[in-house]
Length: 135
Image 1: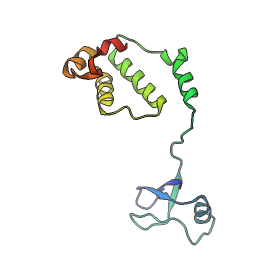
Image 2 (image 1 turned 90 degrees about the horizontal axis):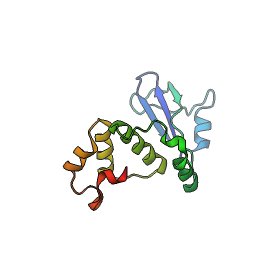
Image 3 (image 1 turned 90 degrees about the vertical axis):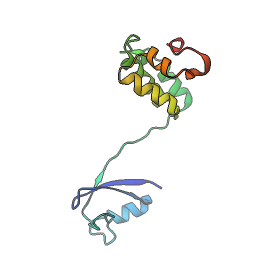
Image 4 (image 1 turned 30 degrees about the vertical axis):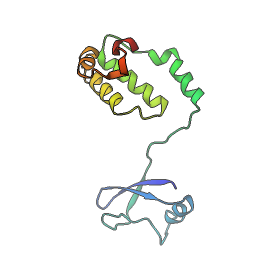
């Protein structure tokens, strides 16, 4: 069931409502008696917000995007922040949760910490391989 996002103009809080397309059409029709209600203040003065959209890509399309030379544009192998940004971008492109260890490494790279320092503090990183071997 779709999620519709609103902002209550009375209490200024964000509101998420789950309803079918038909329910949404009925609830937002002019002069509708079944207008959506804010769960916080019970107000009916809601303004629709357009949230993020997601586009479905095949695995082949995701791999093509990652293999494109432009994916490497701006990557500075000497700058931990640049490496972290690249790793995060590739993770998003794959559309998978890479796990807590991966996220910790990327967060630390993005904060400017060196790969050597990260490897020293996480000796089991990569299950035997060197962190630098991946770059």
